[in-house]
Image (cartoon, rainbow, N blue to C red; front, side, top):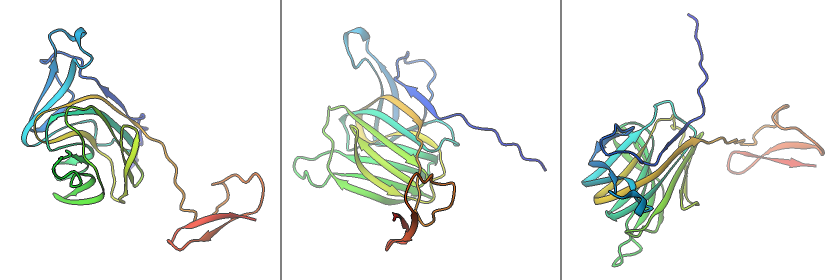
Length: 231
């Protein structure tokens, strides 16, 4: 049996939600209530179009293709009221995906809020990384998750806040996420391919690196990986 391999174009998708409320959406709304919001006089506001989520529990919506991988997923998010905001990556089913969540800051207990990278596999949640800090209501933030090879990175307003590794990353859709909200707004979605290169330095085979000068060799390190040294 012959096998044909077809190259896949780089991932690129954008959505600024500048469309009529009745227009067909790219998004599959899994949980909660979702609606494209359009002001009657869009020219009078810089915040005239956005995707609005509301739910007494989880609100989630996904888009994309199952073969998407090695990508950056970014969205602007503003919660008018809500407990958690976030982004979904590598979504394959409601029981298998990865999640970047951010808790709302509670002034009574400001140290309790967390940012988390979460793995959901067979419906079981595992926290891969977390850090303190919460978001403020009625403020726009730019959230971004980059997934490349076995590494996930989460950013807020361009700043790296979390990083984790998982060998089971296999690709999937992207999604928007909120919890217990009467109104959380999403806008300016961008998904694009991320190119990266990693080398554990365990070996130094010919052709992987081009030697311009010096004598190089690989040596083992205490973490089980390796390093290149020059003599």
